Length: 316
Ligand code: ATP
Ligand code: SF4
Image 1 (cartoon, rainbow, N blue to C red):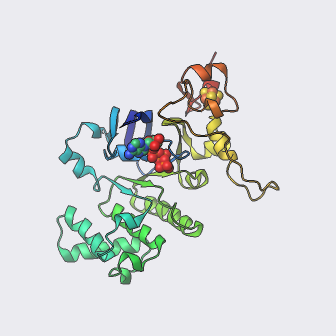
Image 2: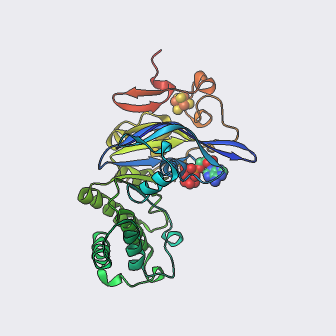
Image 3: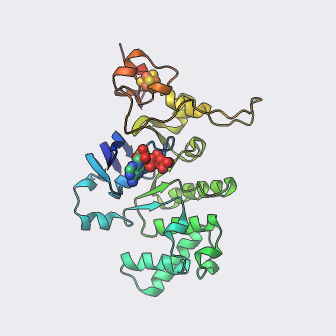
């Protein structure tokens, strides 16, 4: 359904070029949930925004292709991509308060989205808005509430209702649960899974939390320093993570069943993208780094159908 091929995105800052997404390729099938995970600054959000051609300045999409059912979104005119936004691909952001109008009733905001894009009368649009509220677990009697009258979780449900209002093929959700407590986080994850089964949309979910990503996703892309280190089915990532960075991310997940309750973290810092390291981006922190890792960038290899960027899997 969506295929990203060799996507590269730069921020041309006054201090120099930041390559936020470097030669990334991945695909999302119909009704599939793909998760993107990685530490802060690894390029996850930039990749999400690039799909909708909404990378903020001084960002530019340098090269690559983004194919939605075979149509290259990077080749479309501004009018054409505007028609895709919301209708074919929509977005849910971390903080609904920045996206919702505080002075407008939530039901009316939903109505506005529907009426702006669909050629239907007000009554029909209202019925659809109420159905959408119900689909995301909000009772119709909250239609006339203002955003501040709702809890954080309910506001995020409203954002999800707006994102699915026009039956998009793909929803991109950037840290959709980060501002919520763990119980509400779980409810939002369940809601996304339920909507995928009911309406068959695909979902690209972005988070720094690998346990959340593994819980919800069919496939997982692990990003580091703008590069896709691994792209594999979630159960494979749990069973046998290939890239040492994925392995380290998993080791850092707290496990309440273990006696050792100390919080683990990956030693060292993420790369400075103004002065990236030579060779593999992860080599300064990688426990398995070899000489070649310090000199040459690893290729992306296919190992048992999984994609991994690491010299460990290169023959010879
Ligand atoms: P986070 O979870 O912190 O949002 P992320 O993995 O989503 O991180 P991005 O936000 O895509 O990563 O950032 C990737 C790189 O691009 C970082 O080095 C960041 O500093 C840089 N960057 C992002 N937005 C801008 C911008 N508007 N101008 C300049 N550099 C930017
Ligand atoms: Fe580690 Fe080398 Fe693999 Fe990079 S290429 S992840 S440094 S082993």
